[in-house]
Each structure stands twice: as structure tokens, then as C-alpha cells.
Image (cartoon, rainbow, N blue to C red; front, side, top):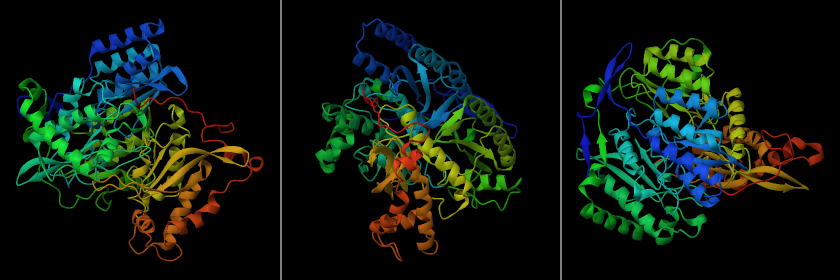
Length: 619
């Protein structure tokens, strides 16, 4: 079932001032003819020869998402399989952003890169430019298999048993434009993890973690996870799935969803609802039976479309594993001379030692995923100069990771990042708040989660929360509505947007959740209380204050929150009800006449009103 190509792939030499090694040529995902097709469909739509619904289905399948309340503008979602992107691709996105968008790009929580507010007639030109760089928007939206994710630590994580990246790329390539995945009941998501901590496998329709049994490569595969108005953690299909059954397992699962998924009720047509309503044991048996059918009937032609490309070991810059720099997510600074407090702070919160001796991964802190065109170009230059693998990966935390940087180059990398405004600390800490696009572009959003995430990041960095080891493992994630594009349900402290009438006025509010995480044994957050938007930062500060007063020795914030959720607290806070009582005074708003700013959302200077339109997540 698996066709492995090791040495017969085209190889190119990558130069580095300290090293040189060969890499496979980057995959070309885009097709020129699709850009012409899109331009023709736009003309037909403008001429009234294509209905709104038919055009909507078409553009979503090709990655053009409607902009908030403005049908003549689009958000273009660029698929970045596995999150792996080259300097040339970053430069192309920068150029396209300046020519057709707003001069910046947005990194999503699913390793896509988005360009906002592109005029509908310009979408095909953006697509054409992306094809030139080997990128595509095909199936980035709509009822298809979306961008296949892979942990940004894959290949460098000390806890992984092998690199899952080649498998994620093979599945992504196999499913792209595949008739199997063109008209599913709803969108479908596949995540690959490097280890039990990274990859968000528990919240995907199919989540796969690299595993090794008796020297044989394979995966632990989870099915039926997902976030939204109703969320579920995925179920383990079997103890071990050998690598030769990865394709057949994915095909079997997608085929079952295609046949049995609910096509009538958009609110309940994700695969997680099918699994929940059918029951896991029944669904599990059906998948295993369907897999046997796939393996018995699949053609050689189809099998050969799935090719896992590995580099020969001689092309990978690995000498031997490190022994003292093998802890994720951060390393200490006692073995390197800094260039001031700013460098030390950045080093502690943005740098990870790899399992490859002498190499580090550097994380670029973005504000809720935003990066300017000029910063993209400068980042491309830094990747070329300092990364031995000459690519970057974007992360579910809406940041970039640049890997294979020589340990001794870190001070110079920091100076380069400082010069372009990308040396903010805190990428791997609670201060790097995740925020979906919210009301800046999304039809379904109620609140400006995007701006709130930036305000949280700014405030918490000013308070030094990024260098507080007690807070390091915790996360804050924010969505502008209950649909969880900001992944609020797997955050230590999560928020999703809504509206509330306070007196005679409407105010933007968030429902706050505690205790979620996205690890292999993932856990969904528990709803605690509603918090007005302009009180969220104050509430977060109060939670940290209460935690500091109540925590046990060596207890981190996420550990303390778990204890409170389970009713095992001590002191003044024993359970959720106790903390709600202490937080309630902080959440109170003055009357509208005495504090009009509290009745305005972030990024808006007028009175709040909850406006939404038809969602663009499904075709």
C-alpha cells in the first residue's frame, strides 16, 4: 500500500556558510489552468450566468472565502501542507499582498496563510502568482479535505520516533484534487503529530502520531475529533497502524464519511457528529471493514499516487543526538553569552534546542498571526542565510518556526529580527495569545477576537508573564464566535465571542473556558462565566493573582486550573464556584452613560452591535 522513494527523487544542493547538504525539490501544488478557470467563472457570475450558490461552492473549493458583509471582496486562503514554506514562497506572498491585498498576511491556526480584502476580479491573478511559487488555494475551503497539518517539531523533536513529515506530504498530495474528497458532507481535517504533545491530533477528523513497534514504523490514529459549537476528542482506532496501512485507513474513513455523513443539517454534518451519534465501537468496526475493502479493491494506479519521499540519511545534517539540549519547549541561557536583557528574554522564550547536535529552532512571535509584506521578505532573507534546511514552518500558535539554525548564530539572528520588528519574546509562552480573524473579516464573528488577542499579548509582555516559569506552559486562545477557529476549547484559558444586553445597551462579551489542552489525550475546556470584552485582560490578570496566592509549591497555572476544575482546590478557592465568586466583581460594567468605551468592541469607536451574515465555512 505504500510506495517509498528514497534516492531516486530529484535532489538539489543547498548552500550554507557552514554546511551544505542535499534536499528533495519542493513540491509544486498549483495548476495554471485553475487560475484561468476561476477568472472565467467570475465573468460568468458577473454576467448572471452562474447563480450565487453555484459560484459560492466553486470559489470556496478553490480557496476564496467571502469577506465580512462585502461580497465583492475575498479572503484568499493559501494551503501550506505541513506548514512548510520556502523563502521564495514567502517573497511571492509579500508581493501579492502589496499588489492585491492590504500589504500584510495572516497565519492561521491550521498552517494556512491568508490574504484579506482582495477584490473578486483580482483573485485569479493572486492564484496565478501563487502557482508560479508552487502554491495553491485549491480545497483550502469548502466541503473538502483541508490543508493537511504536520507538527512544526516533526523531524527535530527529541521525543519523536521518526519524522512524520514525509507521510503528511504524501497524504496531502494524494488527496489534492482527488475525486474522493471533492464533495464531502462538510470540511475534513487531517493532522500529523511528532509525539504525544504536538500536532493537535486529538481534535482532527483523522489524527496520526508517529509510532514504532518492534522496529516497525507506524502510527497511532485517532478518528472523530474536532472543535466547534459541539466539540469532541478523537478515539484511538487501534493500538498500532503500520505505515503501509496509512493510506487505506485514511481512504476508508473519508469514504465512510462521504456515504454516511449528514448532508441535510449543516449544523451537524461534521464527521465528529456521525461518530458520536453512531457510537464509537460501531464506527470503529465499520472503518476496519472498509479498510479491508479498500485494500482488496484498490488499483495499482491509485496506490502509485501515494508516494512517501524520504531523504537519504547522508543528506540530513544530523551527527548525533544531544544529551543536554533535549528538552522542549525551551532551553536555558547559561551556556551562551547574551547581547543584553532583550536577547536573554527572547532566547528563553523563543528558542528550542533540536535533537540534532548544535542546531536550534527559532520561533518568530507574530501578533495574532499578522506579518507585513516587508517582514515576510526580510524573514525570507534570514531563512536563506541561517537555516540549513532553507525552509520555515508556520505553527498552530500563529507564529513561524525557523529550524536548523546553528547555536552560535543565534545572537546574529536576534539582531536581524530586531531590525525588522520580529524579535518580540514570548512565542512559546502564555503571552502569545491565539486569535481568529473575528469581525475583521469573518461573516460569523460577533466580536473582534483578533484585536483582543493582540491587546492581551501586548499587556502580558509588559507585565513580564513570558518569563514567569509558572505560566509558561499555559495558553490563551480566542474565537470571535462559538465555532472555535481560534481553538478556544483547547486552551488553558479560552474565550469565545458573543453579545449581551446590559441595562439598555448591548456589549461585546466572551464566554471564558478553563482547562483545555490539545495533546494526544486532549481535554476540552469547561465553560466558567461570561466576561465583557473590555474586562478580559483584567480578568486574566486577576486569575494569575489568585493562582499565585493559592498555588502549591512547583504547581504551574495549568496544573492549578485543572485542580480547581476537579474541585480539589485549597485555601479560598476549592472549585469553580469559588473562583467565579472572586472574579465576578471584576467583570461588572458601569452604566453606559458612565463608561461608553466598555460598550464598544476593540478596534471600534462606535456603540457595539452584533452583526453576522451567512457563514463561509461550508459550500
